[in-house]
Image (cartoon, rainbow, N blue to C red; front, side, top):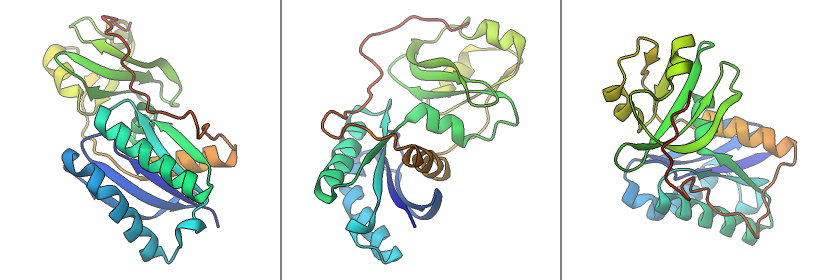
Length: 221
């Protein structure tokens, strides 16, 4: 049986989970961003002990690489790479927005996860009902005209920490704002799929995806 350890510290709520063949068998959560670094190693040790596994029995380590909190991304990537180097295991990296989209029940609707950045800026991406990217992950400064052409054509689900900014700006009838909170199942499934394809990151050069080398005023449409 293949076991993958998944680390997510990109958002305010962090988690680690242990999966078997793509299904979650154990998880730990931390809701305080400032505690993410102290949370990780004890949580991982507890998960493995609960499952009766030695660290070397893990077949791969997956990490949510970003975008998200700069400090959180560094903490998660450092932990994941350290484990992979120590245990000689492959590293799987997952994009935060891809995972968020995959974890939101969409009912066939388009989805737009948003991560809060500063002022009126968010990290975002846009996905169709089959989770194909319509807009690749990008930082944007929101305005009342953002996503206008897409919203005129269909309802879109906006969610995540940045969606509150957008909810205050848009009056469009097709803008929907469902509740969402970080969950582990989609990360486990994504990590398992990539493991089966041997889609591994280069352990030496892997680094967080900060997603913000510049400020964009792009108005997706």
